Every structure is written in C-alpha cells, then in structure tokens.
Image (cartoon, rainbow over all chains, first blue to last red; front, top):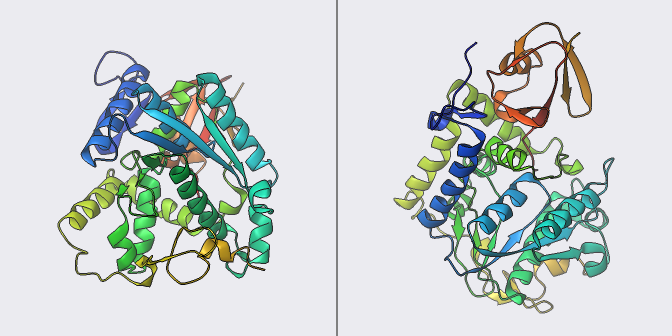
Length: 309
Length: 64
C-alpha cells in the first residue's frame, strides 16, 4: 500500500476529503481549514471584521474549533457556556464545562457560564419532567432554554452576532428531516445566516460547509481537548439516524452530503421557497409579558410558560 | 502480538497488518463517522497498522 501524500507538499497526508478530491498533511490541513472558514464568513456575509462575536460553546469539538479559529483569524469573540445540569454515566455537563473553561483559561478568553439550576431553579431534566413537551425526551425543552438564553445574553452583552458550531452534517440532517416531512416553512428559513431582527439576535454558522469529521480532525490536530461523549439524551435521536443514513449515501457517492446542502442553498437563493407563506410560528408580533422577548401570542412566551406553574 | 483497536470504551484485537480502512470495515463502522489516532497522531484511511500497535477510533458524530 503506497503512502498517501499531501497534495500541496511531499509530507504524509493525515486526511482525505473525497468531496473536494483533496488530501492534506497536518500543516496544510490546518491552514486550509482556517482559510475555508474565512471564505464562508465572507461568502455568506456572516459578520464583519470588528464585530463583537458571542460563540455558543458546548465543550464539544465544533464549538471549540470555531472559537479557536475565530481567535486565530483575529476576531473579537467571547464564549457562552450553558450548564444544562445533565449528568448521565459520564457527568456530561460537568465535564463539558471543564473543557470549555480550560480552553478559555489557556487562551485568556472570556467565557460566561450560565447555570440553569441557579438561573431558573431547575436543571433541564428536572424542567423537562415537569413539562408536557419534555416528558418523552428533554431535547425540545433544552433547545428552547438554550435559544432563549443565547438570545438574551447576545442582546444584553451588546454582541453583534451569535455564532454556533453547526457543521454540514448537522445542517444536512436538519435539511433531510425537513425535506422528508415537507416542512416548507422550515426549509424556507434554513440558512447559514439568520439576520437580526428586533428582539432576535443575528445568528451565524461559519462551519456550515465542513463535514463533521473535518472539524473533529481539526481539534485533534490542534491538540484541543474536548468532550468526546455525546449528550446521553441524544442517543437514538432522529437527527443521529438521519446522519447515519446520509453517511451511508456518502460512502457510495462521495460528496453527496455537500451537494445536498449546497444545491439546497442555491435553490433557496433562486427562489424555490419564495412562494411559501410564513406560518404562525413566524409571527413574533407580541412581546412576552414577563421577559420582554418576542412571542407569537399575547401573555407569556414559550420559554416563560415552562416556569408558569 | 496483535493490533489493539479501541472504540469508545471497548477494545478489539486483530492479527497481522491491516489498513485503517480495513479495520473500520471489519468492525462495520462507516469511514465517514470515525477518525483513527495512533500515539496522538491522526492517520489517514490507507495507513497500515502492524502487530503491537494500538489505535484509537474516535467517533466524530455528535448531537441530537
């Protein structure tokens, strides 16, 4: 078996990216990854050079890789870690927080930590057990709490944009689910950038064109310690099932995931969903009577209703 | 002497020389979902492993 050689030098390649027909050594891969991130930021006009950025940090590979790269590119980026109070066999939330805090401390970065138990009186599993929408699995409650908290902190901290580490596999899995169920309104809204509107912070996904194994390769090559274990509640989730299906297609047709997502963005830009009428979930015409964040109905918003006993 | 392969908290053993790609196939693990690490170094799929070596297969799929 001949050694795989980097396409840019004569060193041993550490990764092969079939969809790009590209194989690179450690040095050139780390260089390529940073350049590609900057390219995506510019291509989708995600944010500007002197923007104040808040990175949603989970302690996992994607968010830590993103924070690392934004700093290497010279952006001003603080972190936000939300302690969900999820334990399981591996003390998931505690371990994830340690990785996030160690990363920030080693680089002298500013990380804000919000504990759901201290802030809201309950952990995510406790909150989910008490609410109808979280009884089977706490993921819906967790998502709602995270979105609300991230939006609030972005606003209160005076940040220009909230960035998340969603990668192409995450985006392709969401796209697959929405297309499979003909969720036209959700398809219409899926994009690398959600522009800020009154009450809602600007949100961007600079890693939306990277495969999940590429962000993992980046953190391994950079020596960044991260939480390997997944959330115990993610096991058996629909999105993991969709990722598995998409990887099966990818194995037979290299580049399939990238084409699926990029061609969707192209079709969307060309107006494929322009005729789709927005539904009620889009009409945030009210303000929550408790927290003041946008709401689709009068009275309490969905987040504050979680605590309305 | 054997090749020791660690996947999450499980350990597997193989005899002789094998590529990363071959080991993933033997374990019925998709190439897209794993990276191989030996002595802290990332290995490409065609890298050959020999008796006495230990490789860790890192799952890259996360989220729910």
